[in-house]
Image (cartoon, rainbow, N blue to C red):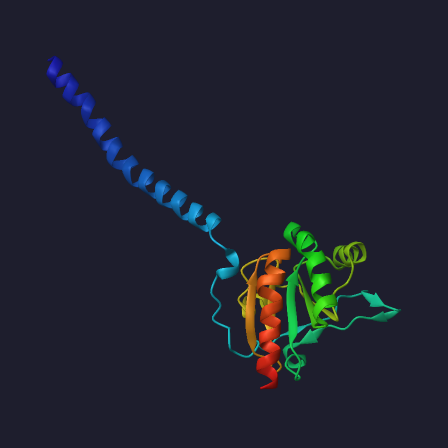
Length: 201
């Protein structure tokens, strides 16, 4: 009788083991995947657009954003690739890494003289204006992507992201995540110089 009871009690435990095993394996795989992502360099994520023309997009002006009393213009992909290297930076006021990146964008414009075009992503115009008012405006033009459709077309993973386009409007380099002092010096500025050389050759 005791053996029968032990067998009866063991059966549910075995069934529970078969149910839990796949969940445990899945959890372990998910944890390993998350760890590998956290250890990797997000700027190394691939982009299918490298070497191709910028996607056909239009980014309307950020309403109320002015310089010397004049509305700062938005832009479209047609404005890119007019013989000069340009930088397109996707950002948002609610994005903490964008705050960390902003001084380096200011330095980028000052050190290279390159035109930086900003794309304000899924943001409130008033919040975006406050952001620029507080941290400064590195942008020659500021467009908006309120629906997020433009970011999808450009293959944006998240905020912030930065693209360098050569003089023909082709995407030469993509930086995922915030630009840091290190990446500015080692990656971004060299990529601009390389794109400039390619544009004049």
